[in-house]
Every structure is written in structure tokens, then in C-alpha cells.
Length: 351
Image 1 (cartoon, helix red, strand yellow):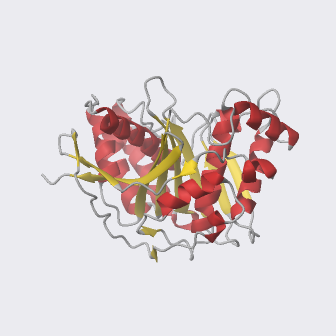
Image 2 (cartoon, rainbow, N blue to C red; image 1 turned 90 degrees about the vertical axis):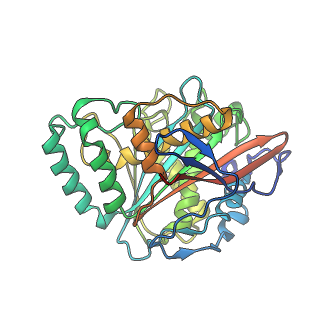
């Protein structure tokens, strides 16, 4: 696909990645910016740096080079080599007025080890009366009876029973396009048979498809099936001049771009009106996308963000260690003609 390979505006320079950043979260949740990088806690994940980034250095998009410079800062990534299949849950944030970053969050998890989490969350829901009707855990809608009471245990179950990584990429909102502009994207996607993508939807679907495919190329073997599940969004809706099938084909094309030897199937789905256990997994990238936008915005502005106890718990969860779940944040900024990237860590300040 020519659009995916060459649409990055080559007039932009590619600077070396910025030093890793850290935001320390105090027990009262107010944030304190660390003066030096704070080491990421070691976990059981065994695939350590340096990673094979050759697929991102060849004839791919300039955007791949941007992400590669940040990935090189990571100390480790999860090892999915023994997984029968890998599920990827995606959600997004930062599209509200006043946001400083658009956030794209991906939960990669070992699908065949998800049973204990599903069972324990179902029991938790029964105890708190949020099983029927199925009441979602959403970052923007936490302060609600049963969900609020169940939240601490839900976060504990996420950390102890989900095997994988939640990866969030925060793109500075002032960056209008990473793929040549809306008009170029709309025409190119239409010419390639992917339908009409207007009003910024094309930019978003390309960002998400590339991020998904890049991380999948690093984490998933070519012969491992992938199950992609996404919240309802403009990128997977059946619009007047495009269908969800167009999104599916676009994702498959991006995946082949970075995983040339890929032989296994890519299955995909989206959240339905009637919610299920799949939406409990979707809550993890929803939390991450919301938290990262809020904390990075607070860090950039220097202004404390007023949040309730429930959001504060999610922020502390984001900073907490997990035996099985890595939490990775990458920030993308533009300064002049240069695109800068860095890995960002959120860590708790000892009480």
C-alpha cells in the first residue's frame, strides 16, 4: 500500500529520542515530577532489550521510525511465545475539549490465560449488583454505586490475572497529521478501495492501525492468531461511504507491512450494545488512555487536576507494579520540524 509506505511528510526531521520521563504519584495523588529517570520495576516478562526493530527500519512509514526511537528506550516487553493466541483490546482518549494529548491504548494479552480473570470479575459483579445489566467500568463514569465499590478489587484482578501489556501512545494534540494531511489521506484511502474517511477519521484510523501493527510485529509470532476488539468508535463504524469491513482490511494490510511472514488469522470485533466480559478487558485500555492524558496534561501545564477518589485509584493503579501486566507509555511531541519521542513512567512516591 503506497499510502502506508510513503505518506509521512519527509520535510520533518527525526531527532534522537528524549530522555525517559517520570511522574511520581504521591499517596494523596498530587503529582511530583521526578528530576531523573526512575527505573521500571522488573517483571516476569522475559523478552529484554535490544529488540529486533528491523521491520521498522526498512521500507515502512516514517511513523514507524518515530515509534522505533521510543521502543529502543524500553527495558523489556512481554513474552507471548507460549500463547495459543493473542488478544488486543483498544480504546482511545483525549478527544474532549481542553485535552493536550490524544491517547491510543492497546492491551495485549494471552487469550488462553484469560479464564481466571473472567470468572473472578463475574463473581465480583454478582457481589456488587453490576452483572445484570452489565455495567461497564469507564474512566469517565466511575463514581456510580456498585462500580465505585467494586473498583479497587477490579484493579487488583487486572494486575494479578491479566498476562500481557497495556501500551499507551500519547500524541501531542498540536500535531495535526502524521500521514500527510486529511485531504491526502481521504483521497489515498478512497483510491485504494478503503472507503471515504472524512473529518479526521482517516488520520485516526491510520494512527491506530500502524500502532497496532507495529507492536504486534514485536510481540506476536507470525503463526499466532490475533483477536482485535475495539470500543465503538469512528474508526469501526458503518458510515455512509465506508464499512467496518474496510477497517478490518486496512488493519490486515498494516499488519502484513510490518509482519511480512505472517500466516495466522486476524479476527476482529467491536463492542456491542449488550455488554459482556470482553468489555471488562476493554476497560483496561480505557483507564490507561484517560489516565495518561490527564497526568501528562497536568505535567505539561503544572496545574493540579481535580479528580475524585475513584479516578485517583486508577491513577495509582497505573503507577503500581504488576507481576504479569506491563504498563508502557510513549509520548510523541513536535518541536519545530522535529518529531520527538520518549518513554514515560508513572511511579508511586513512597508514603
